[in-house]
Length: 137
Image 1: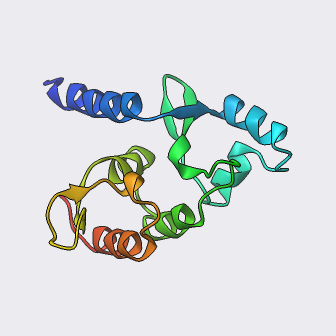
Image 2: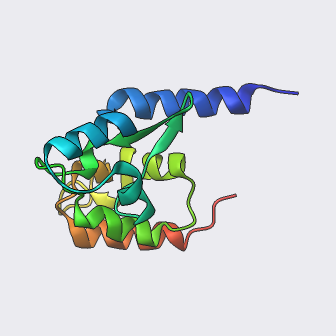
């Protein structure tokens, strides 16, 4: 049996994980408490306002899902609603890698990663809709 598949998956997960700022559930809860938000990481995740990935037995939350006051960005929830049946690492990959449905400029060149343009709501939602309706074998 080949281990190439699991090795490739782990390599992709490593790339995603080491390219962004991630908070453990405990770190996020502590910061949320300091901000007096009244929410917990798992509560926000249950409400599908944010997502996490599991790595080495711990849950991690990408920092780009929040504004400077640790409030979840509304567009993330809207995207997660559209990606409802997608596994958490696939969601992380969707946010991380350049997306051909989201061009960097008006000329349609140089796709950009969704996490880098979270202020472009309409384009992100359209890209999430297209992803949801795409078949991947």
